[in-house]
Image (tube, rainbow, N blue to C red):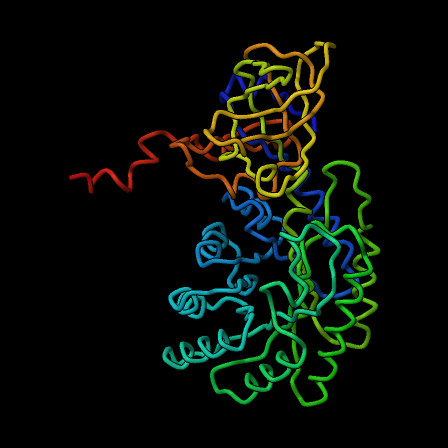
Length: 402
């Protein structure tokens, strides 16, 4: 990524996020090409990075959208993704969200419990519509990832077991207002082991064959997302091996593969850039304090996640420190016990692999405005989200002051 972070800091101030759109194109094309042997839909997981310009860029490449709220569905529609390429997932959909999804005519609603299926059927009946249904199957396979982003075990809140799924498909077949359209699995995020994915796909593919035997024919096999990226020194799954292992399990099935990448496409495209305010020493503990904070990028505080960090100066005087922000919390840090060079006021610090689950999880904690977002494409930069002002933050409150 040949981005001049210092020049962007002069132009847009700090902190900011910058995304390499050329890299995003490469990763989308890599995955789409891997599935070229079969009909496929790459449905971008909007929750990873929901900036409208990011979604639009992927829409232009042919992507669909995997959405987990009606707001994300509307974002996808806003930038031109066709309804027939949009999937609405999520373990707890509100009635109004289900109603809107049905009225918008999206590809399918991905259902995660029999109670939810009953709500969808009831609302579809009220609207006199037919709801296209996918059911998320929980294969009870350990994804070997961080427990906070594991989703494929029975102890997780996601999906239903095989027997429950089969009963739900039979309910769909027998209903005038439900159409069994797809099947879905997603065992977790930041996956770096192929075997759990293969095991899971095989289990769910066997269910598809069993359903076909009772005349329930599905059109879409959704393998979810979750492919890992490099934050540190991870050994990644080869994209072609990933696709091939899935296609082998689907042998003999006339079904379209759906894949829902998020982090895989945008994670390493993004960098969070902040600047040094000052250093302080408490006893023998050194702190480098920057203008970015946990409200801007919470992954280190929330997951103890690692991000590669680089100070953009020439100082060779390196020592142990904590890189922290201004928020009034001990949990406000980007890294602890990290080796960084001696810094000066306004030195630029780049925090890498920040394209996924970073800005989307930002908040206004401590009444801090969310930062600017910048696109970098064909060696040119452009603003894709303005930095929030104090007036933006209070705009939904001030009229109610008494």
